[in-house]
Length: 510
Image (tube, rainbow, N blue to C red; front, top):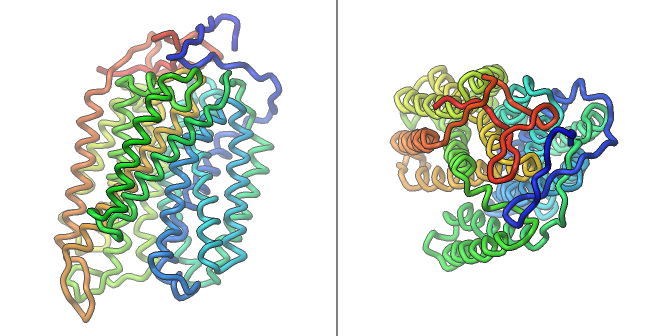
């Protein structure tokens, strides 16, 4: 840490000061591109198996319920490991943990590539899900390494890779499923993961900051237990029954474990999650907005492909192929690439609060378009692209809002928690969409299909989530800095001090 930045004395309510690490590679020129590429690859892994799910029972002999775990276990592993590995990165080196996460992704890909046994596939998918921690780790490295004028744009791109990968993963996976042996996509993902590791080691410097203290193993176990109970209940509630003993028992266990975990975290000197910092309005409201944005975004991905594949006999379906349905989301992925720097400019000039409010409004408009244009392929694509555009701006603004409210030593853990909130929002969205589409149906062509009203209800719910995110954003506190449009880093300026910890100030329009 530079000599002109005084160190705050750690207290039980605050995170210890970061420790500089002098030994770092000297080739950071392509770090942004490499980290963004890693983010896209990891995000693709989250969706790559979706087009394969209907075929898994025939290919593996597993039941449809067992096949659904190929998605569920990835969500659970990502939710558990993202905040934990973010904290480990803060303490032991962000690049080191990022490389380890990519190694886990490669191991998971190889497991899925060499076997057709459902148990092995589920284990491999769990390992792939754990690699979601690459996103907050990459954001933290960029914050530590880049000059102030480049931080917002780089972080915006890195954050948007979650949506970019989701948009790209579906059509790519559909092409592989229709034209090659299904194991091929796992071999390819493993090879790309190895390439990621080589590029990171060559181009990404190790973060110069460390957080002192011991790793909070008990806190990590408590957080993991609460998350597993909550997400299992949410993702499996439709199959088990929302009033079943298993579902209600898991929800009750999640609440009890979370309460005990929270009480413990408030007492420990070096907590897994600093709840005092997380309770600040700037951080708490940002995480609530992230959950709502994650919900609103995921409905677009879940519904679009299924809707256009519905048979024409339904009166609204287009009978599109698997590949065409996946390609409907591709323009949205392109817009995410295009709009991430635009979002950074908006955040630099007016503050990330304005960017997030604008994004939530755009997503809401997108669902209005979706509601009234459900019969024409090009209008469906247009509506989906508008939603993706708003998501791009939101995902670019969220890390800036998080970093504004936390000390440098908490960046990895804080961004991991924010990414976790997006994942929880997606889990709730998946459960909601499944419940709506399964309950509002009619018989057509000898099969049961959701009605058009069911899809429109999903659009209304997702649009409502976006409007709630807008409302939450309006209550975010504002902050101004002397230099408009700049993000100050620990290597250049002292930054603000609030409650004894240094934060990254970003101009905020009030």
